[in-house]
Image (tube, rainbow, N blue to C red):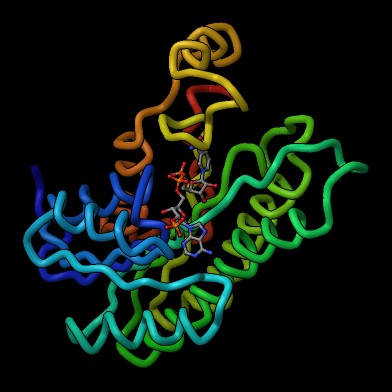
Length: 250
Ligand SMILES: NC(=O)c1ccc[n+]([C@@H]2O[C@H](COP(=O)([O-])OP(=O)(O)OC[C@H]3O[C@@H](n4cnc5c(N)ncnc54)[C@H](OP(=O)(O)O)[C@@H]3O)[C@@H](O)[C@H]2O)c1
């Protein structure tokens, strides 16, 4: 295992489960001091326990600007820096045809995935630009800019917007030493890629024919892409949206 993030302080939103948890663990395995944020205190605590070392948690809701500001302040107060942020928190929302989508579902999905990602960047950038820069990776999805799945209008629109937000932010802030990129996974092995009522075995069967690679992605495979984007190895990679989807949108 390498040590690409030795001495670095990394914030992972939505770090209490799934891809966020796996990525937080991967950063820690490569030497980072990791802080995970999310709304559920118990699940955050179990992530922190699993990672061990200097990992810690902050209970915060990314839809709330004051909460996000407090999160960045707390990370810096605890560890003296914020070098890397993975803005991963997101929700799927109940699938429905575009004309049948409930307004509260649409607002919640946009509020979490798009506004939440922007609020995170806003407060992270405020710190990073005053302290020599940093790296930000946003969580988009292959369903956004790259694919189309019926019943997913709010989610897809929110994630396509994250890809655009990423490119714009990258241009806006690279001169301040802040590299912004995004990752766009396809179906990854968390509860979010299970259709209503589907088991892991059902999903495996569905993906055999639905994906060129024929299987679900591992959370570690997404984590590997995030770590590369956040690392110095990707120093010339700016505003990129890295698709990690087993060929689904190839
Ligand atoms: N799994 C896939 O197939 C897939 C594919 C492409 C993209 N993605 C994206 O990957 C990200 C992680 O998803 P996952 O698959 O790992 O699912 P997950 O296990 O449900 O993770 C979602 C995370 O986001 C957090 N979260 C949700 N709303 C939040 C809010 N308002 N404030 C703070 N944290 C919040 C959740 O924690 P709390 O509930 O405790 O707040 C949880 O830690 C999401 O953005 C998702 O859209 C997933």
